[in-house]
Image (cartoon, rainbow, N blue to C red; front, side, top):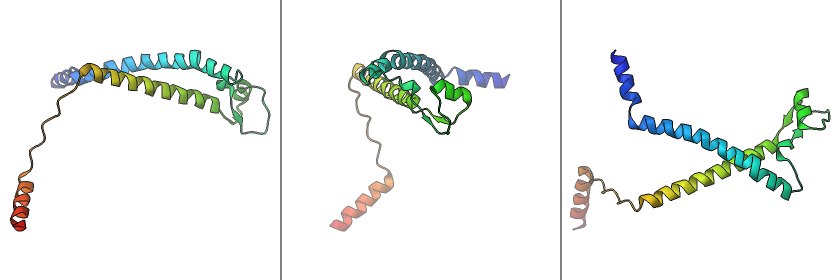
Length: 137
């Protein structure tokens, strides 16, 4: 029974709940950003760049030519999917920018936090300062 009490104390800590909520919200937030990038931003970028579908961009590392990415994947060809990498980069930068804006907004709502008091100077440092000052005289 002691182990259950320890687990209960561990699980009910405030930080644990904060972490759990952050993970759950982060997962949902990731899906929203993913949809924003795939369904809204990348089609506009593709339209602006001549209707290129970035998801379909790849390098074929083999000798056989395939008409589409799907055909190359079905054949098991060695391929480098750089278009998906571009999508993931855009995902990352959008996510990072949104998190930056959220942190900036939260900090603004919190207002200016008073600076923490300086840590007391250790005794050995005070003693060394006294010795230095005596030597200067």
